[in-house]
Length: 599
Ligand code: GDP
Image 1 (spheres, rainbow, N blue to C red):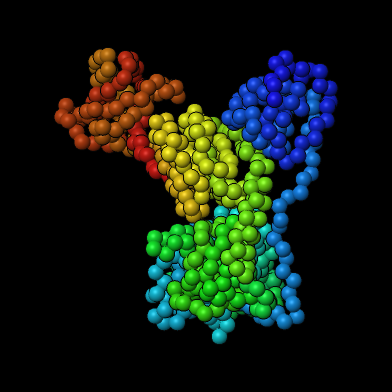
Image 2 (cartoon, protein in one colour):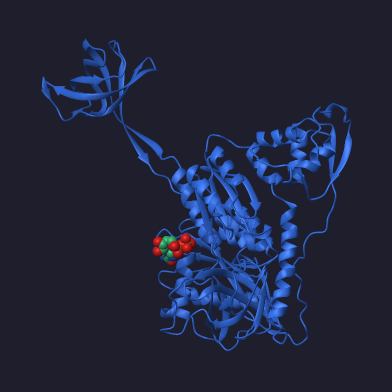
């Protein structure tokens, strides 16, 4: 495509241009009757380094058109999107299945402790001890009935899962600490539960604490979040528990089952097994280790599975304790080995008859994903984000690359959900599908960003370039590990808070010597005390003149360690510029401390 050098934007009077989900820079330039260089320049101004063949999405194109002040209206041409998850229609042979429960809530309100406590008391003695590694789902028994507990690896992953149409939770237990009440992540959890159409059971935790105030929690939930406790005539079960003492845990599980009963949860056992990937990682010696949650049908060792673009023959089928299973039916969390490569969190898995069929299915899935992925290299959300940057907060700049569009979306969404309470702004400077490229490194070097690669490769040449340009490339295969790393990095960016404490005051009563960087004077301590080494602000009629350091304090011509309110003293002040003090000037003594903040 030849560049059209003279820009003829002005001649474009309210032209309507149809653009599909995405368009290459070259095509857009042609449609807009602009030179490619102008367009690339405009993208560059917005922090996007794009080549002529790179695709940008509709939103980005719209923003660029507006920025250029063109009289063009872009209209979105609707294109069919990829396959969405097929709804399973229950047969009349469907049987009751255990409820799938997620435990959510604000950090430190006791989610982990609660899960641990439930596991400890509700799994058969001795067996819980066998759980040596982190597993993303467990099963417990209550009154001979099973409950599947998801150890949701954080709200982020839950959100990502939901984004892919996977609403696998039946009940969300929202943990609220009785001594802390409703907090931001409590609200987020309520929102997630509602959006996922899950039933809510509230666990008011830490009831063993003296400061526990369950009534306040209930009032907050009822008045501000429309969750009305059953005991007040509402329809939300709220159970007071203590993960520490174990009190109320039985009642909590009973109520989870009660809520589940109302839902009449059912599944088909006699259909080919299907469900969702809830964890996937590589392990030395075992290869791919994949956590699955069976939704329908039964899994057996030796079956061929397809999940997204991965397939494999089930080599080992293990329950959450690591014990080998002969079969696993609906709502059972299992770990399987045998996948050729890692499927993605949230992928749906299904059975196929042979390796050949498995390969064909993954090829079809891969093509579909690639087609979707090709749609977009740069998204409008990224650039809007860039344009609305506030500079006060520290920025954490990242470029995200992932193998397929689905994981790219989950990683970016999850990153955006990391709550820094405004302390750090996450800027996704660039994103795309595919291996880390020289372009990415180049952009990262100019923008000072970290590159996150998710399930992608870092070609040796690019690696060398990154080392040369001092660009940090962080590669991950497990989303939570990536998110943990991002969170840590953001924490490290939060500027420590400066806390000043006023320790005393003094009024100048005599000035004895004024040197270039020192003043020797005397005064009366009017409040608190003065000690050598303390900092002081010098003010005259409310105007701050300088900040000085008290290097020496004397009382009755002898050096003193401290002089208190009401006493006269002599002092030496260290200044960084000549300071001419006058009688009745005031000193305010203070200490300054740096307090590290965490997320
Ligand atoms: P999470 O961040 O929600 O998973 O919270 P944790 O389970 O890590 O708990 C946070 C802190 O609260 C830990 O120090 C726990 O020991 C404490 N904690 C959790 N549950 C209880 C409880 O019922 N009573 C008391 N006193 N402390 C608890």
